[in-house]
Amino acid sequence: MNFSRSLILASSSPRRQFLLKEAGFTFKVDPPNIDESFSASMKVEEVPMYLAEKKAKALLSKIKDEIIIASDTVVILGEAILNKPVDRNDAIKMLTALSGKTHLVITGVCLLCKKKIISFDDRTEVTFAKLAPSEIEFYIDKFKPFDKAGAYGAQDCLPAGMNPCSKEEISFLESIHKLDLIDKSISSSQAGLGMIGVEKINGSYFTVMGLPIHRVYQELQKF
Image (cartoon, rainbow, N blue to C red; front, side):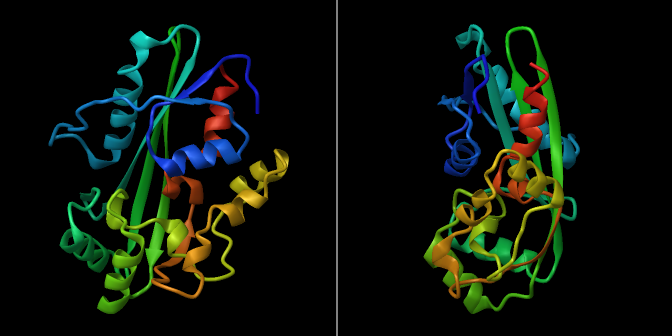
């Protein structure tokens, strides 16, 4: 996909870079160095969009005619945000808490240029199967999900043969002739191994991965 204006991805996330690249976007990467703290009084559902805007605005002084794409993903269980685990024990604690339950994943996105800002979020419910402690420990030791909110990557935890994408995502991928992105986004190394954690996804799979590319494409048309 070629836009008349250059795109800058404000993220070092390999998953976000992968999704944009495989969907056909041309972009540069410039991760901002910001404090990702937020007010304790802020509603948990508002955090991802707030942080996405914070990341985008940190690069505003560096751009001319480019469009910045920034995003942030949070995993919410009940009223608590599960951030990136600080160590193995923290990851075990998170996955144990997620076991057998449905949680919410919200990805906030900010598209920003000198004269315009568009912010939105996308929300997906993820249901985990009941996990044995041995499955959790094997997954953590094999996939080392310490850079992932909630201590898991959906692409690593899908049952064999499951198509995780929503109808809207599939329709989008068909329209850009990129249906193979579904298979490419699932870790081939997890087939038959590790933790089959995800039982059901209600909403966007790519939101859970960190960037709802179908929504990003729609909103970029407004620039």
